[in-house]
Image 1 (cartoon, rainbow, N blue to C red):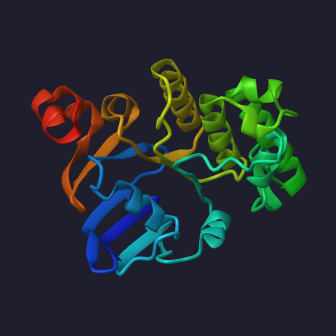
Image 2 (image 1 turned 45 degrees about the vertical axis):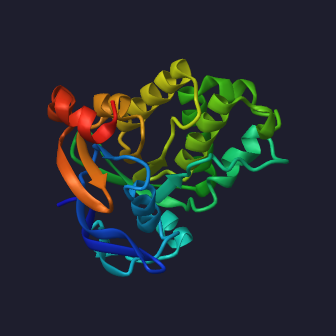
Length: 255
């Protein structure tokens, strides 16, 4: 069963049909990419999943439950959290304060621990403890944020702000992390650092759906790819296979 499944999704902007009945699946523990040129429908798709844009018809299923057109805060409580295009750093707040904002939906939870003899124990983790744990994990992933935790977030470089935006999303402890154009406007060396961090996030157990224009870098880290063209899925397949198809990459991804 897919963690996220999209069935016959249709999205309209007034009289314009932006998404035309697409099908898409994201499986647990994977990186799935949505690629395509400007106007293909990439960002519209991810914003519809996140509830910012409302679907005209079709279904979005998460953990086999219908979440179509739920508000973003309700989706965050279910574990779907987006790092938005443009970063949307909260000016007037420090780096650390920005990160804490991302933890607003975290709640206490009970975990089960199986001991060596097979005995199962339960332990309650408070929201405060989980938030503290998340903060340390973000600082380990992006050490520069720890160094600048008391600095005004608006004074960070573009690459550091992107790290902060991703870190803020991780503070919500997502089951599904939505990344919208994480490399936008960044220098090539910083882009490499961001993509390395995305791979680490996956290795730590978070499922990722990424929308990107940097096709080549994305194909190198993704497991599965959907290529959109004018609101339809034109091509789909394993990223490693698509990366080897030079004609396809040049024709549809501009690389």
